[in-house]
Image (tube, rainbow, N blue to C red; front, side):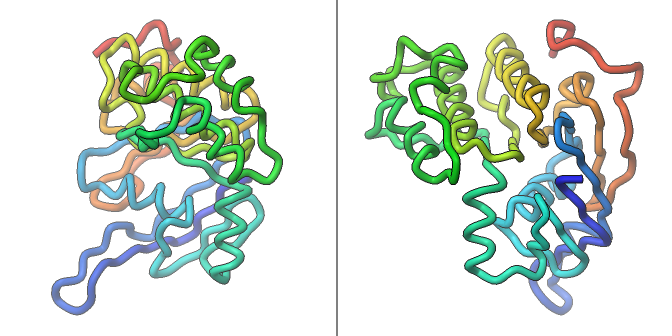
Length: 232
């Protein structure tokens, strides 16, 4: 297992105004799995992703990711963990507006321990002819592909994607999902957080959250679909 969560709880605030975002969550993910975390707004999806990626700390329980117990790690250990183990893809792209596509991806290269070549990764996501374009010169789908390329360039074994198609049209969103699914085929553990149930049809596993609790964990209903069969 590259991701192991046992009895993980996350609370915000104290006393009568405290909010419990995660309740005793158990979750296990293997390398090479494409997992969709499904649930409505406020169900705890992003909190779960942030806890796995060490952007947030659990209030209780154990979080072990890529062999590191991040629930008990020091600040230095967490820094090393983020650099070598996980990489994020966000809904809002989070590109540097003053840097070209290649320079944005180079940021991921510089952060990684055993990174890939920036230009090679951009070629792999179909942007080999747009290395010198700035974000404002790219479409939304192209910007998201740059963001994915930046994540891939770190060469980290775990990819965490928070609503990666939320800002995209259907056709472009399907292309992005195909890229993410391909990364699981290459051996990465890929977790995609979404409220879109249709996306869960292409997952190896679907983990459904409700009010911070895992209410189901298993293969998609009706069996796994192909990306080309999606519609919304």
